[in-house]
Image (spheres, helix red, strand yellow):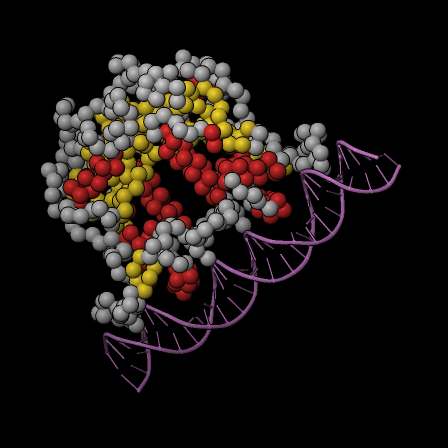
Length: 240
Length: 240
DNA sequence: CCTTTTATAGTCGTCACGACTATAAAAGGG
DNA sequence: CCCTTTTATAGTCGTGACGACTATAAAAGG
């Protein structure tokens, strides 16, 4: 990369692909678009698009996020670069290098096509495969990344509405990790971490329609990291 | 990203940039090349180059790693994608999207220019800045990533020769983190983690020229993750 | 032979966490 | 209206990991 001979390099198309995740009814969902053309016509794919000449990949990703979800304000949503997928044959038509992002949404309004793209829809994470291109891999990487970051960051609140109960927060962990957690222990850990959540002053229950004792409401606190981490229960092959 | 109109996108140059880290004499070093031309002529920069038409970014990164270090076999070296830097103005000449990688080397032979690129040299990490382009940021991100991965992976052995002492392994942690660690406690933790290190059978000391009691030799074990993690000593603003 | 240096072994108290039990506050059914 | 069910919250107990520290072993140097 010393001098740039004008023909020393091959120009590539650069795109962004988005793994937009949310929780609907206690199940992990992902925002997908149906492909209308070959290749992979009729298949579901991650939303995405080209990076425009004056955009960074981050800017393009947030623009696509707004277009595909139809939300007016996506500035507060968690958006995070995953990695870049650049296998030469990942798109049979041409050389496309794609910067993948993961986005986390609290609630999940069914998207209304605000852009010119095909209509996007929420699909349960477990029903998503097989996706077009290498999007299965991207989606799996996004899931793994989010699951890992729940351990040592306060990212779980990104799945929650502005006010939430500890039970809802615990459901985030349980849904993403696919494991059950002990409720008193989860509660103790979250409350013992300064800045993770803050109680809402007049915080009675929100949905009084629930059956049991109404839960207190909390807001996300200023903390971003979790020390010591909240480790997911080990399955196999770990150390002591 | 539904249909690809041939002129619906702007072609970008795609490059890789490498943060090649090693330990020399108890100090973290980084492999740098001196720029001969504008912009940033005379400045140090991370080695890198264009992704060729039939390469993935990973393939290009390993090729560049071999070229810049002059090593014959780089297949066993740890090479890991960091993230992609795509700000529109990051290179004043043209639109360049760069996929950054971090590479970890055990020993540090002074590189002999095997390729056509400018001579690469090892510089102490702390003396490296300011670098050309946005390479300060890339280097900082690489350092942060490696430091974080030392906590929950067995990555530290990637800095060590095939056989090493526990003191050398501890020096990896101390150098990358910039903190001191208690030797008996470090030893206990490493040995209590199955598969992190394995004793060399006839493992007397390697350098009998040392002063104290010769240390036993170990090899890297099959484990890749560290559960529970080996957390770096917290400085400030953490939780309980 | 004694000191210095480095490696290795062991101790002790604290804290975090998993497992578990107990109590409180709501809804629903007889 | 009482009693069961359901969910939230409070507390207990034992184990294990880890930080801080002390002790012993094996080398080199004077």
